[in-house]
Amino acid sequence: MTSLSASKFDGAEGGVFIGKGTQIVGEILDCTKVVIRGRIEGNIHTVELVIEEDGALKGNVKAEQMEIHGKIDGNAIVSNLADIRSTGMITGELVYGQLSVAAGGQVHGTIRQSNDEREERRARNSRSVVEREEEASAAP
Image 1 (cartoon, rainbow, N blue to C red):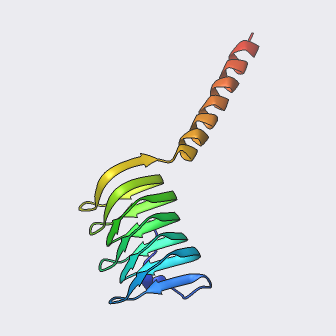
Image 2 (image 1 turned 135 degrees about the vertical axis):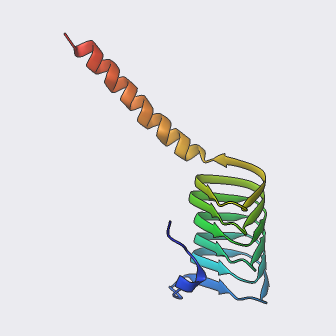
């Protein structure tokens, strides 16, 4: 599994790094990557979210992927991989495409796989059932 950690944060356009000891109140929207070592109170909408071990977020997240070593107090919608590391904790609702929780990682609240992913799987399975039925009826 590829780590999204801050050590790989390259200051790419649209990226935000919140250093240890920094506290922010407000929203962060439409970023490519957000790395948090400090504290944020507010909502975040980003492609990638990394919360380092000393980092904390009180608010909601919408991201394509996230890696949590610190804490989230709020809801998170992650379209791809939600990776809760051994020191990570989320308190709230977590909706995910894929989920990884390391030993020691914590989720307090509800977790559920995204409806989009389930619908996509159902569509794939439905097609394969139809195809099998057509093959069976076409057989001599």
